[in-house]
Image 1 (spheres, rainbow, N blue to C red):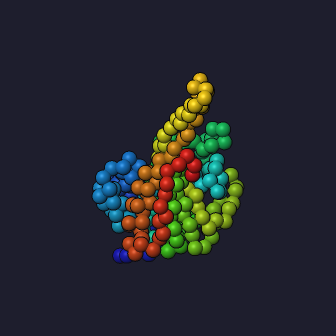
Image 2: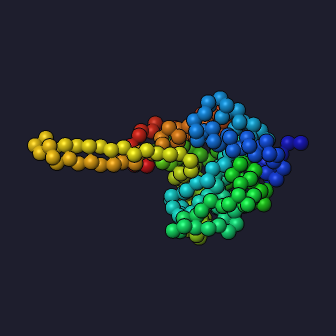
Length: 228
């Protein structure tokens, strides 16, 4: 029996341990830069059973101190509040802390098996995504129509562009040293945090290959810098 796309995520509760492992590996292979063919095979397997590849994420234009779950499946990008999936959670300095291992509902969702009763804040079909831009720290999903997203802290935004930090990419620090040609003792040392651009590119490349076979979504060239 063929499931309608809008119901596909409802398969979550029947996920086997092997399917949960595939969901984790599908994400982790992209995070770690494992062979692209193996990563794509895992993504296709997750998609074929109606599941999703899931990241925890920060949506800076909505609420920089809230976490969300971003679920990618073959039909759409779905955005969930952390509280909708995990229930009550602890914070530190106002920032959410990852739920403990006893929170089975969250960890199953993080492995691609989202409870069918969980309500997404936004469901964005790939047909509504016109461009995905890669930055050093974020991906920008530019939309053809506005999406409304609410955070666990009650902030609500209507967006035609979603600036999303998918957790897991690790940046680096670079030091730039300049010496005064007149006074060699006058040394200026500046430290810059450089984002994991290659990580953003891996996510973008994997996504569009699997969800946009017609190459309709624009992919502007990204350049490495100390900013977004």
